[in-house]
Length: 188
Image (cartoon, rainbow, N blue to C red; front, side, top):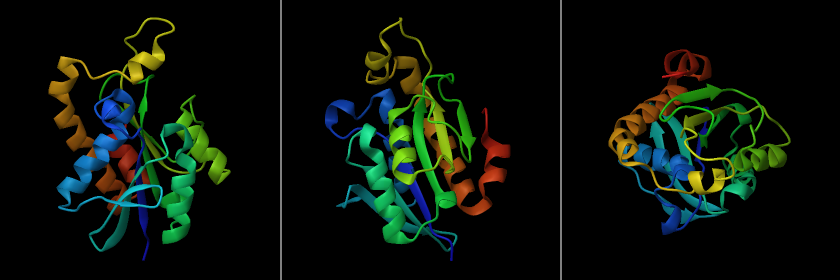
């Protein structure tokens, strides 16, 4: 039986909770709620486990801060015996308009420090990831303030529908596979 590891990237702490950089945490929070499951504190973060259409799923919110996410991902892959093609990392992306998603089976870190650390710890760029567009409405030199800033009022209104949509993409990945998920969800 194939097992899956869904990883939402973010930073721990209340001050980061609703920032753009924490979209990974928001997505997996919504997913776990939808599956009527719960998170509990465990090694390297908060973890939830459930089955989706008989497939065992582990959902992880690393508590290592974004830039050290690779240790948590590697630990849970090894602990649960999950191969790289069955992990799905969810993160923010400044190069995509708000709410647009891009799913790939491999690729560069694109300057994202969370992905950079995962690739370093796995010694590979070959793992599926979903990038959630947060836009790039910031002045030169203000990138960090932007990603660590809160959502705009307009984004807050649109976020529930987008979180639901991304949750559908995650479940599609688990049951329908990467290629079907890319075909059905990319760029939307």
